[in-house]
Amino acid sequence: MTDTPLSPETLDRLRASFDAQGLMRHLGASIVAALPGHVTLRLPFRRELTQQHGYFHAGGTAALADSAGGYAAFTLFPPGHDVLTTEFKLNLLNPAQGDWLEAEGRVVKPGRTLTICQLDVWGVGGGQRTHVATGLQTLICIKPRPATS
Amino acid sequence: MTDTPLSPETLDRLRASFDAQGLMRHLGASIVAALPGHVTLRLPFRRELTQQHGYFHAGGTAALADSAGGYAAFTLFPPGHDVLTTEFKLNLLNPAQGDWLEAEGRVVKPGRTLTICQLDVWGVGGGQRTHVATGLQTLICIKPRPATS
Amino acid sequence: MTDTPLSPETLDRLRASFDAQGLMRHLGASIVAALPGHVTLRLPFRRELTQQHGYFHAGGTAALADSAGGYAAFTLFPPGHDVLTTEFKLNLLNPAQGDWLEAEGRVVKPGRTLTICQLDVWGVGGGQRTHVATGLQTLICIKPRPATS
Amino acid sequence: MTDTPLSPETLDRLRASFDAQGLMRHLGASIVAALPGHVTLRLPFRRELTQQHGYFHAGGTAALADSAGGYAAFTLFPPGHDVLTTEFKLNLLNPAQGDWLEAEGRVVKPGRTLTICQLDVWGVGGGQRTHVATGLQTLICIKPRPATS
Image 1 (cartoon, rainbow over the protein chains, first blue to last red):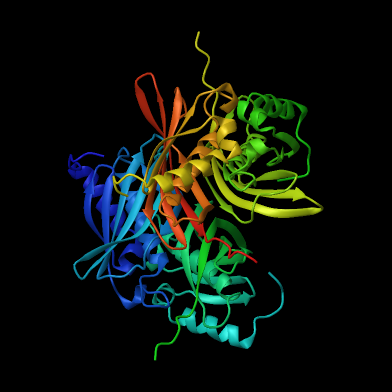
Image 2 (image 1 turned 135 degrees about the horizontal axis):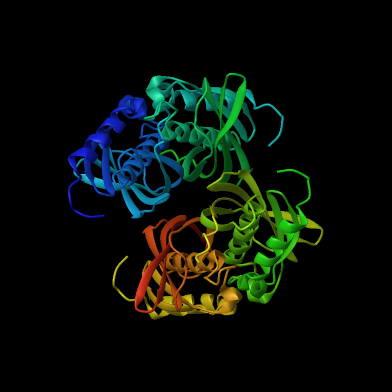
């Protein structure tokens, strides 16, 4: 949304949440950049991520895109709130090849309950950057449960 | 589409293609059932598949659903033809928990060029079967390239 | 969801809301059936609804499907609550032709905030019933605003 | 895609196709701008287009967006070829109000068989321009049938 950097507190929350995702570690993804409403993730190529032709599997592309959008929304939530994907849709534009994938999530419409993100995935390698997928995603903000005494 | 079993030749092609998918092996998925236009995959729970709350990550759910639909379409294609996902959309209905996920892909509309599948994912465990996600997917049939001499 | 009929009060609310939709009247749509979580609408063919080949325009198909799903969700809401579509996706399966279109909305997952519906549209005519479109839709329940004194 | 104007021949084909759409005339839509891969349509407010709260009905928003994307793809097709929507998805971001709606279709990925468009709808009025909806759409290029003698 802006070029203002995230507060250190928000960045810490984001990193803690990302590190708690077993799948992102298992795939080998990492955070490239995080600004308010805009998060970029990277996933280096490995044979463990391929479909039957040796390209990145659409499922890995989707997992990376979904996380990028989820964290883009998360950066705009108040402390203590969490994020869940309610739905997403992805159009696969080009074969997902390259040395790594880069997935960008950008908040199109923030909201107290629902946040809408645009998702874009790029295949990067050999001096090229190819638009691999574009998508839309709806996320819901989960309020913290009141403490019970 | 029917209860007719797949021909041994089609089943061999399906298994060979599935085994060539690095991602399905990396996640730990396997084929449960395959009938013409209807394929079911299974993904046992592992910490390596979780999101930040310890449930299955939506990205893993999506990868499994995408493959189930892709192979459901593939069972209806002529020998030598391959399948690519052009787009899919997934609604996440309930927390994806359980001992394993089961993803069903069913062909709603076969076609020479495009095939449309319905995707459904279930979380199974503790005697329960919960509807985790439902989706729609468009697949394209890739004709074999003519051999070059 | 069930075969229990709607309460007369819910049926009245549904009809009042439907009749307040200028677009449904302008297109010529009517309610065929309404059960809890399951609403069917009908749209007779007219030249005013066509695309460039003389079939029903995908936009009319979408309008009808969106309303069917919206009212399917509405039947499950408490009195005084209203419904808004947050997103929908439609796959167009066959040319939308026939004497009329029939759109079915069915609640797949009810919820206090979000409700998910499956949408199906059929073209009916000449003794045939063709599956014209299938879709998914997310709806949000709008709580009544507190009265101001 | 570019700022090059359309050829007069393409513009004629586009207008002839648009004028043949009964639904666009019935709703009151018109073409605002047409460039290669980028078409804008306008729909003035009328009571005949409303949902139950007096805003534009999501179905009208969808019809306009679908046509804008369809014609954006159409501008890139060779003469004699036609366009069909295979699927689209729309996220509704804000109440669709204003003096008119403006729908923009932009080709994200052209292709010989499939073309992918981004769809955006704006509500314009009272000096404001509100982002009402954003979407994605897949279109298929229909080749002319060989003449039969």
